[in-house]
Length: 331
Ligand SMILES: *[C@@H]1O[C@H](CO)[C@@H](O)[C@H](O)[C@H]1NC(C)=O
Ligand SMILES: *[C@@H]1O[C@H](CO)[C@@H](O)[C@H](O)[C@H]1NC(C)=O
Image (tube, rainbow, N blue to C red; front, side):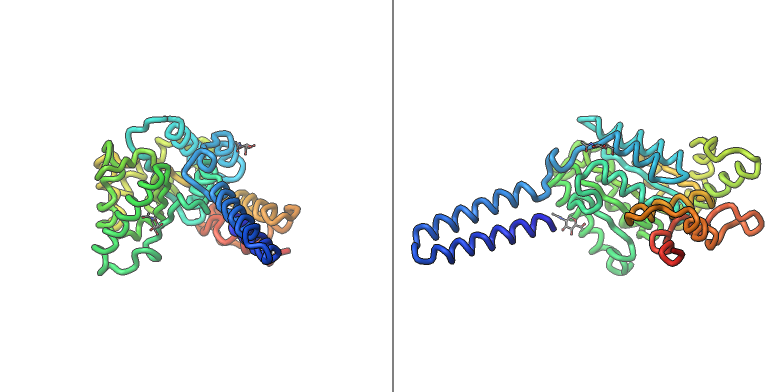
C-alpha cells in the first residue's frame, strides 16, 4: 500500500516535471529519467524482499506476544517459543520446522500462527512469504485432487525457490484430502534437497481440531480435581492426544503417515478457554480498536456465550471466536 502510494507520487512528480519542462526536450528527458530511476530505487527499497531487512526473527517479541496476547495457553506458548527460537537460531537446520497445532475451535491456533509470522516477517501475515491454504478455499473438489497435488507442489517449490524462509500454514487440516498431504511429505523430510531445492529453512504449520476432545477431557479432569490448568504438562495430554488422533478415521490417515515418519517436530495442544479468558479476549479486542478496555462490557460479552459441559459451564463452546466483532454490540 505504502509503496504503491510513494511510487504513484513519484510518477506524478516526474510527469509534472516533464510537462513543466515541455519547452526544453533535453531537460525533460533528464528530469523524467532521473524521476524514473529514483522511483525504481525507492520502489525496490520499500518492496518486501527475501532478506534480513524484511525477515529477521525477534525472539523477545515472540515470547512477549505469546505470554501477553495468547490467553490461557501456557503449554502452547511454551512449546511454540522453544520450537521457533530453536529453529530460527539454527543457521543450518536439518529439516524444515513442522508444527501441528491441535485444539477446539476459537482457542487461538490461527492467532498463534499469526504471532509466529509477526515475529519473523516484518509484514507479518501480510508478507508475500507467508502462505495460507484452506481445504475449502484452495482444494474444494475431491475430483480434481491430482491437479491440486501438482499445483500445491509447484507452489511450494516455486515459493521456496524464491525465498528459503517461506512459511506455509495449512488451516483445517482435518478437511484436507489425505492424498494432498502425502504429496507434500517429501518437503517435510530430512532431505538435503528435493529436485535441487532445499526446504530446510521453511516452516510448515498444520492447524486442526483433531484430538480436541481429548485435550478438553484432560483439562476438565484437572478442573474437577481442583487443580490449576497451569499444572497441565505436555505428557498429560500427549498420550491421549496421539491416541485420539490415530483413532480418528478422518484425521488418522494423514496424521499416521506424518507421525510414522517423524515429520512433525512438535505437537502443540490448545486448551479449551474459560470465562476469564473470554473476558481477556474482549478486553484485548477493545484495545486493538484503540479504545479504553471496559471490564463491564467484556463481562457482558463473556456472559452471553455458551459454555460446556452443560452442568458445570466451564469452557466456552466457541472459545474466543467472533469476540473481535461481537463486543461492539455491548458498548
Ligand atoms: C522485538 O520485539 C520487542 C517486543 O515487542 C520490541 O520492543 C523490539 O523493538 C523488537 N525488535 C526489533 C528489532 O524489531
Ligand atoms: C506461491 O504460492 C502462492 C499461493 O500461496 C501461489 O499463488 C504462487 O503462484 C506461488 N509462487 C510461485 C513462484 O510458485
